[in-house]
Image (cartoon, rainbow, N blue to C red; front, side, top):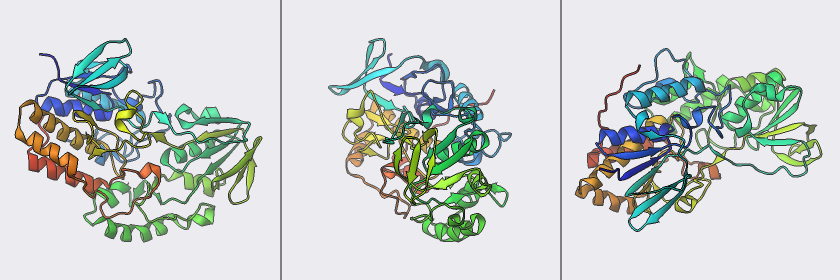
Length: 435
C-alpha cells in the first residue's frame, strides 16, 4: 500500500512529525534534500546557518522531545554538535532514519484537485492526500542593503569560524542571540569589533543562582506571565545593571514583548572594551559607517546578523508572507488549503522542540482521523476555519515583522494540550531507546 502522506524536511520538526505519524499508525513518505537528519544543526549541510561557537539558546532540561530527554551528561547549553547527535539518536531510536529518502530536493508543490503533487529535483512527481512541510525557518537570509559601503558585506549565514575576522575591523549588525554570539567571536580575533543594534534589548544571564535561567524563570515558575514579568524585570536590573552605562540603549519595551538576549559574554566584552556598542546605521560612505548617535567608524567587514525569512521557495504562493507564513491555524493547519500542514514555522519565547512535538501529534491525530473516516476530523476542520485563539499569554508582543505570529510558549502549549484532550489526539507511545 502506497503512502498517502508526505513529510518534507528531516530537521527537528520533520522528525517530530515522523515519530507522531508512526505512533498513530499512519504510513508516510519522507524526503530530505541533504545527506542526513538534523536540518540546520548539521554544520556541514550546504546552506546551514550554523557556526562553530553556536549553542542551544534554551537549556537541555526544557529542550528535548517528549519522552526523549537530552542526555544528563550534556552541559546545560549543548553545542551544535551535541544537538545534532541528539537528533540523530532520536531518529535512530524511533526507527525513522531508514524511511527517509535523503539527497531528494523538492522543487514544487501544487494542488491537484483534492490531492497534492510533489515534484523532486529529478523531475519525478508523486501524488499525496496531505503534505506536511517541515523545511525550517532559518535558511533564507534577510539581508538589508548598506548603501555606500565599499567594504565586504555578508550575511551571518556565511559565517563559520572566528578566524574569518582576523586582522579586520568588524561591524556586526543585529540584536538577536546570533548577533551577540558572533560579536563575541569577533572580539577574540578581529582587529576591532563593533555591534550595531537599532534598539535596546533585555539581557538575561544564562544562569541565575547557578541554574539555567529558563528553569528559574520559566519551567520553575507557576506565575502568570504578567506577574512573572513584574518580578523578573527588577531582578534583571539588579543582576545585569544599567545597560546605558556601557553604551547600550535602554529597552523600549517590557520584558518578553520581544525576544530577549540570552547571553553573558557580550556584556563582558563590552565592559572590557573588546566590543563597541552602537545604535543603528545612519549612512555609509566608502569604508566609514555613521551611526544614529553621531558617532562613526572605519570598517573592513559588515556582517549582517539580521535574521531570516520563513520562506518556502518551492511553494511560497501556498504559504503567503515569506517573513512569516500566514493563515496557519496553530502554525500548523492551513486555513486556505485542506491537506496542507506545517510544523516548525513558529516564533516563541521558550524551547521549540516540545512545541514541535505537540504540534506534530495534533497533526498526526487529525490525519489518522481523516484516514479512518472519523467524524472528529470534519469537526476539527470547522474549528480550523473559525477558531482564532489568543496565544499571547497576556503579553503585548512587538509589532515588528519578526514577531508576526509570535506566541507565548506556555499559552501555546496549554491550548494544544486542551485540543488534543478534547479530540483524543494525544501523543501515542513509540518505542525509542538510545544506542
